[in-house]
Image: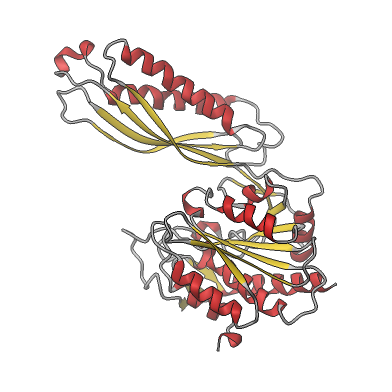
Length: 387
């Protein structure tokens, strides 16, 4: 009976679904719907345009403003090429740890949130508890916008959003934003001995990548702002992780492709960085087309995620500190769906079980101690909602 499932039992079920971002999450959503339905909890789906994925949201308690949203994502990163010592899709206990893809990032929190929703259905809540489970967090946190907007229009406005990314149950009040571009540099082929009459896509791409290197050096040399100072590193970074192109060593490259990402600190505008990058690409395009008109640089935005900015006397931070007893100041350089909630008017923090160092790793795990700490957190949250 699903009514008897513990958080660990729920986690076992969630891990068994290989919800890699490139694949469907619908079997997991089916399972979650059935679980909630056993407790009389009505949930709703928001389908992806392709019809292969879905967000899910639900509410328990009175239909009034002022509740709490528990936000988690259902997608995980691939296991391709990783050396696992256990089956990544079977939750396996060893040495006080539960191994499985997503056990830490972040199905452990999802399991706790589902268990809390079930328990909440039997409590006399004075404020509602809402659940938000999204897809495609691992590929840019853009799809969750539909979920946030739909919940804002369909449910009473929540007062706090708790995003359960792994923080070892510490209260994280800020994270960097992200901006990504797929870049295609189009050159003109000639024999390399005639280099001045051709356009090498690789060598032009190198100029754009070197612009990123220069910006990194400038950012590192600048005194960090008050918002940036707590981060490691305390400045915006630009990074190219993959590049491909060219035909042979003695032909100027016709094509070169790479992906560039910006991890920017709170207080800086993603649009300012986008404008600067696009302007440099336009300058290089003009230089290239002066040699041959069919050349150029094509830019396609891959993702754009706002930064999560620490709030002054934020309701979510106050609540999370009350529940955890953590009074430290914590920020992270990775991104979450939390900033999509915050930019749409919700007070938001990140607080969840597990260590981010385990995320995306082979033999990913969450410790039994952290799962227990998360369950205690949810118990206190329910008491708060009943108070």
